[in-house]
Image (cartoon, rainbow, N blue to C red; front, side, top):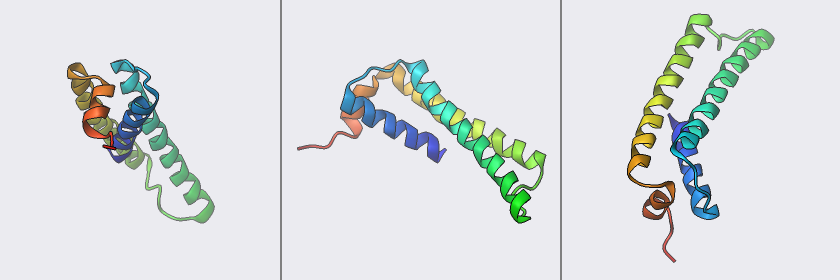
Amino acid sequence: IAISLLIVVILLILVGITGIRLSSPAVVICIFIPVMVCGVAWEYAELNIDTVAGSTYFVNVNDSLLDMLFNVLGTGYIVINVHELLKHESLTDLYRRSIRWKS
């Protein structure tokens, strides 16, 4: 969930600074895909660390699948909320309302 929220903030800042317009599906994809890639990379790293160091980060395949399921559920929750929010206001308006610093 933390990576999802971080990506939302990064998107808001990029939209606020550059003025680009992103559609709601593009925002959803920009949030969901990087989080899933990070989750898979993390599980792969756990497996490699265990192979090299003999540690127990990688418990078993069921544990990894459960981790990925929770990644999907957490990211899905954030994506659904962001998608609903974008039905009512644009990313630019959201940036102006919540992040833009007063000079």
